[in-house]
Image (cartoon, rainbow, N blue to C red; front, top):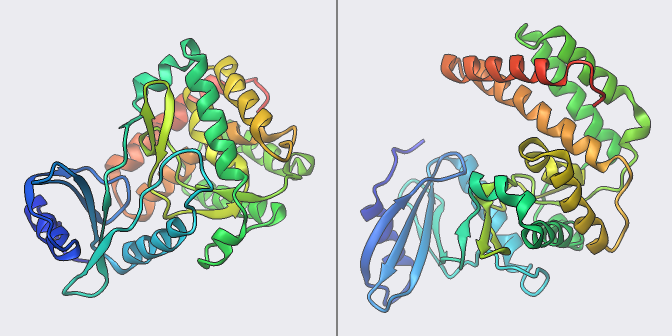
Length: 307
């Protein structure tokens, strides 16, 4: 893995990728993807660019898969997605990719908290999610991305649960709750579809109370649509989540299954188990302690409630 690059180094890569680009200003951007350096460059014509450069082969492969997917999505979505305008080879192999900055601003925790008082944003978010899940599967299959049927998806969750249980850090009552949910076979009869795979508030761009763009498409796959709703189910009150889910259901070409919301809530809970596994597998005590604290809080919050 290479060392992190400065914003100036990334601006130089943007110049190499885009003929005639002359930087006037540049700033580093916190990457939401692992092992990727990101900077925003404003050129002398006032245009804004985003340059991303991987620091590992894995990150480079994800960027390549994303570039191939996004090229095929033009015209299929009611919001903007990143486009590849140019690229520059990296000395260690792979390439940096450059595209125009998308309009809008990243959704914040405050925006999520305000969803209850913003029905237009809730509706726009539901429609945006539906548009992703209605994408033709050929866009994903052509990039070699993963595809899981319902039973394969459930078994992957069971494997994660077994690994989390082996750490000894998951409260027993919470383990039982998750085991019961995953063993309820009837709740896992869903039709797989294209999912973003890494969706959270920071990857959704807003223009006022409308979703104007979605970024970070490197984890796209064919799987459970509940995966893309997990972050929302974990962040808002049930009534607000139902409002988004209602707009989603009205916009989908195929009616979602009745257990979609339940699985989204479960997926949000299991995200804490994955955070725990990340901490234990990397021997990061800070992450592990953080995960244990959140699992303890969750155990107390859901005690006695159905999943």
